[in-house]
Length: 528
Image (cartoon, rainbow, N blue to C red):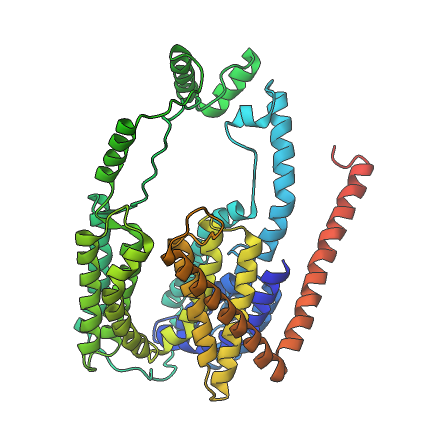
């Protein structure tokens, strides 16, 4: 909770809401009800970045309400949209409410499912459900994400529909011209819609055809053991009736058939050691099933290709030479992957083969990022959006649990705030940029190399990767300390820490108070 609160307060204090409102107003302002739609968009964005309702509502009210009233917006619509959009932080992850509910609901869910299983005549919840009775914060995040986004869409649709019915109460507003380069409609459709859609569709079709996919080859020296049935069928008649009501007759019949097959095969899970010929045959079979292009390489260079085409659309009048060089690197990467890289190719050799194509693609993307930074919308939205995706993606993807993800979010928010502060003071922020790049290098190297030096045989490539990872880690940590020093020197870090302590204390006071109230009601028979 502490890390999520610090992440939210740090982003809220970095004036991101002000920049977002200004930018979104320029985008949606010319539409009927555009300011209201902008408020909903910013509210959803702040909800995903802060998870704190009070700060979001106050910020939105101070920034958006005067502008909306000054442009003849209905007071009822203005206050309603601000209140509704500001409270999206209750449902859109990482919501502090969901984090607290996850810690409480997990225990309640496990206890309730155990009681439900016993009432059905089963031994435990694992037998009755067919899976562990676990409800985590990540599961609640997954459950709340789409409803929260859909709710924000409904708010925006209502504001737009209200403006269409009552145009005088939510008029279109011209909030000023964009500072970016003007782009013709045909070029915008080509580079912002056509080219990205073609790239994504092409990679998706290649994955569907088996040309892109996982290349991990894992062959055991022993044969596979007999898998168990989907459900436990050695249960009492009462438990079987309850399981059929829960899972359905078809699922139960399938589990019974699986268990019968296991019994017919001997009923024992025995692994037999493969002969060298069998091991070689299994390896060749796994190699034949592997995709020509690895999913990691495809994802990386697809992302680089999207950066190149979007950069071309942002500044069509600039010379395309650097972007063409980057595109050549992307094409070469796929070609050399198909021609030279095999599933058993080591990470060191893979890096050496892809070094030249990756260097060309990186050169093009370097110039592409410079062009993308000229667009006000991307410059404002992209950095916090990357932070939000990294935090939520690591949780929803099962990479880590909410605690390390919250620490990542808090650290990223500190570095982002320091970068914005240095930008406001017109000073260089190269240390923070390179520290962010070091984090990316550390993740990529850690994923592709085995960094365990305690193994019996460690290759030279793994030693080099370990040293690179250590250097990237220490430099990224230095960047975090430098960011804290920048915020402390500018009298920003102190108020953030104090506000974090206040909000965290308030949250846990409410939590403890609710528990005391719950126990008091139970002691007087209130649960009945």
